[in-house]
Image 1 (cartoon, rainbow, N blue to C red):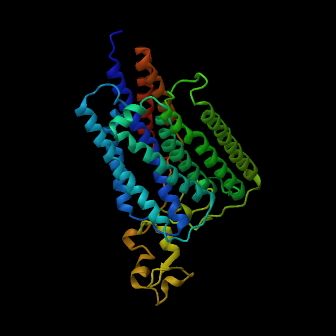
Image 2: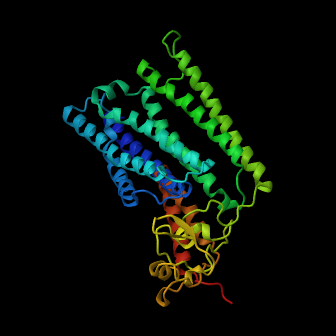
Length: 393
């Protein structure tokens, strides 16, 4: 049809590689919330972690062609993308060292959420190390379209995103549903998943270096692939078993799980100030935030050695508390919190949401659908904006 295969590769990887970072960055944020809570320490190097996240999001758009070193781009392009692949390892390494610094020296509690967060860090390190090899052009040219790339991808995405998501699930589950997941079953879930994960995707690196191509579901016997594929199959079933264990945990604790209370983890951030599950309006009054980990600072003061001590009821008026801590305990008149305003129920957001996929299908298949979807979006958006701000009394 007159298309250019090389241009298609550029378009695919220009989408496909930043997409990986889009999926991993939320998990990085989750881990940056979970680790401080269970290490009982502030997040180490907070500004550096934030800057590194922004750097990864930006630099992720400039590394796509390391998947195309076998396409004949030429030495200049290959060198440029090899360099960008090396450079993106720098902000990633900053995050990893900051997470390790958060754990180091902390009063660590080995909850299921912490184990998944620590599993994220360890598996992401392995995936990152295999990814750095993509910056070596001759090595990457050999890896192209082999299971080595598939193994690297899954160590970053499964070992990264999925472990991070489960860390967040176990951490915020009691806040969402008001009941704690069972820790014993949760730890069984974790160990089954991390063992199955490494059994599945670790051999992929070996298979790739042996020459097994990706996107091939059958291969001739005697090529040396049989044993490692069997190991990977066993690992895949182990991962499936771990998911079954998680589902069993969710079902068993739905009605009989331990009541969570507002702050079961003695956490640091303000969502743990309110009941579990939270009311529709979240806070009765808009909280005045004075610290990065504001809820922690409301619960604890630090002695001269930096050791946290619980704030005793009425203790904010005691003389032994430093003036700075005492001043931070209450809001000034200008900062007094105000009540929460909730918008009235409305169907217009739903109307708008219905129009968007119709317009999207129209872009691909039928201009009339595009026009219809666009019209529905306009009706929903204008209705949403123009409806009265509150129900009439």
